Length: 91
Figure 1: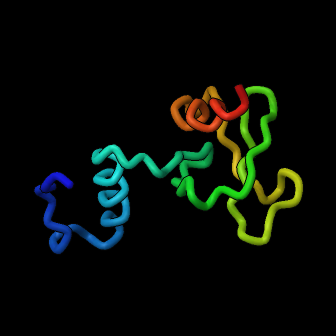
Figure 2: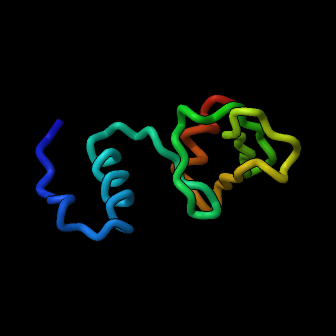
């Protein structure tokens, strides 16, 4: 892992999580996806994905999801990279 020059001890608490996610993504360990509601989810937490035209419904609940109420949306027009990363499994 390359040496990152950010000293997390001087970074305000509310920004540490954001910086850590950026560092992980910069190290080519792209384990995270951005959702339409600007959340970052870990790929390893995905239970299932349902394709709905140009959007994907993603379930990350360990107990499963029912319908669209408790799923997360990733749409092609909003998050092209995240959409393409998951959509490749539907091709």
